[in-house]
Image (cartoon, rainbow, N blue to C red; front, side):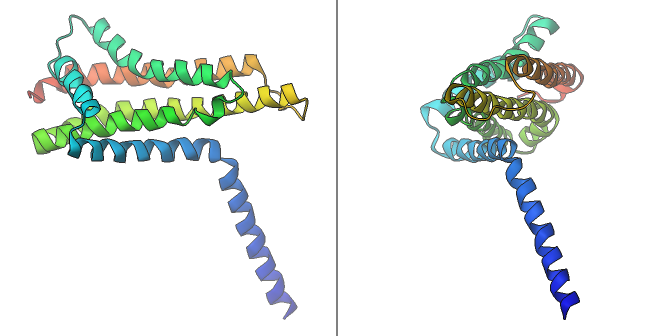
Length: 211
């Protein structure tokens, strides 16, 4: 009987460890949840064809799908600038005490844009639109999302660091402005890689998708 009780205790202990590990990663999990919430909102917004949805899809159709771009460098810059705008906003939110309250709005907006574009492509072009999403958008979007989520975590950490520094409570060990700057530059690699991959895919397979 004592052995059985011990086994139950050990199982509960393992379960509590898993729960603690899950909760310790909330700074990554929550931005991902907000992203998927944004994607769902974008699809729902597409059904209603609101003004924001129409603006996003009009820009996507006139600039991206038409490929009215003069050079490879210009195309690469367009794909690079879009996610960098999110990173810049997230970066400055991290320098604010209350920035952590607004940081997760960025993956929500990012997800909304992805949802709008994906819904538009599928409803307008069915299988061809779905193929474009799988080949052109999802690899690019996944790498950009990875960078945005990691930067959201750092932004929240920085806000907490500033708050604890002001209130003179326990500070983060081995953390500060230098670590914050370096983390953003490091995460920028994912966006550069995503933009390069998107540009290459457009030139390799762009001819297959004439809309």
